[in-house]
Amino acid sequence: MRVLAINDISCVGRCSLGIAVPVLSACGCVCDLLPTAVLSTHTGGFEGFTFLDLTDEIPKITAHWKTLSISYDVIYSGYLGSKRQVELVKAIRRDFLKPNGKFVVDPVLGDHGKLYTNFDESFVDAMRELCKEADHILPNVTEASYLTALPYGAPPERLLEELKKLCPSPIVTSADTESETRTFYPGGVLSLPLAPGIYHGTGDAFASAFTACIARGLPVSDCVSVAGRFSTRAVSLTPLEADKRYGIEFEAAIPYLLELLSGKETLRKIRARAIDYFGSDVSRIHHMLKVLGFAQLIAEGEKLSERESFLLSACAILHDIGIPESEKKYGNANGKNQEKEGPPVARALLSDLTDEETTERICRVVSLHHSYSKIGGDKILQMLVEADMLVNARDEEIPRESLALFKERVFRTESGKKYLEKLYLV
Image (cartoon, rainbow, N blue to C red; front, top):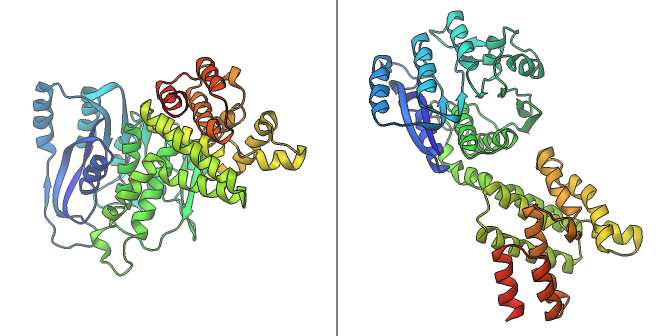
């Protein structure tokens, strides 16, 4: 994953490339950078700062790059200081973005209802044209208002609809209420508790994490969730008494960002809710944890992607979640009743943790985890069935002959077969 980050360098004060490079690198991206300007400090609250415009250097840099045959999976554009720089970024997109690459634009224009110094309506027009070439744009509510020519304070939902005329995937940030910070995107809204304090660099932290997620191939809803939670955590980790000019302490939140990327934070919450739901049924909790362990071993052995590993782990946690309701309604927990009662409970437990597509993917596996003839090419279901059998083989004392037959007829992964043979068929 090779990413080009285009932004300014502020030598002091956490913002711009000072955030983008470490965040993207920590997320596993090769991050090249193209500085648009070099400042001694950023311009928010500092006096006497120096400013070196690098516009004339950009064509020289890119001319050299062309001799190296460099191309990028993602290009991320942040602060641009002039209409000429906007045109240069358009050319960079054309010359260096891979055919299926993604172009992410953070259309830096202003905040709190006003344009930044040195920007005017003609610059807004230029930025609007750049947004038309982007796959994703990340305006705050002020920038969204200028880009759409809607009044500042217009409903975020209306801003989003108008922005879709410029770009298929607009994300409107900083649509805050008194108690929540909200981010609107096509198909949803992320609402998080509003962390105290306003710091420079918060938008850069969001944009950098979002770009990293795009580079890693995550769905937009997951990119928004990860970026929003990371930037909010970074704000919350910054002491209120800290000098706000120096920005958010994003470095302290990077371990949390990496947890979010791997899905570990969400999985912890799903697991905790499942344990609470099973209550005092210790045997069910033990079974769930053992199936989860084998599912993760199989995922590792089969080299699943992060997304697939997350789905398999979530399915392992929730596969038997229909048992309590089955016993209550029918007086038993046979496979068919589990498959019927499990999905509604799973949806309730996942309601604020996963998007609709992910929830339904998990529920489908829960609804079929005893229907071996319906596995087909669903490798998440396949691996869950194998992990479940690796636990049931011991807990239910299944005869060796039956396990050998089950291996022949049902097991498909090399990892699952390996563990079955090692544990029960030697």
